[in-house]
Picture (spheres, rainbow, N blue to C red):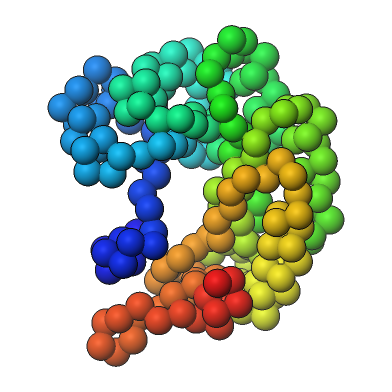
Length: 212
């Protein structure tokens, strides 16, 4: 998060256990967890980010999840969110993780969505509702296609997807949070919500004006 955005008080900080290394860093680290609590008073802890892409299997995630729960207790958060699975097989990864992690604390489910097809989003949400009934859904990253997409998606393509997706996500009862990817990204400026002016200030892009 850009510091000036935080200073305006309209952007919060949500910590994440990004990968297995973070479990080792944070588990039983009362000094660091205490500092995070005092500085940010987080209410949510996000689980592993795109675990499959980072070599984390459902078995590995389930094995380490009790320590993630302990970190959440130390931070005193009210919501512990699942690993944010991504890719075409995200449902299968999460379904296996849930089977292996019976009795685990998972208050909400996170996922990422990268597609220009709104039908793909509604199908994914339908499947979440069927396989994880009663679980709130967090779409922690979404847009028409990331910087790795060839050819790069245009601002117009992102805008078309944004209009349709935001309407769907706002209307979908299980979806409680969603976040465009990304706010400020020098590597994928077509999808950015903000750019910097010559004076160095953050200014909304065309997408930023549409999103907010």
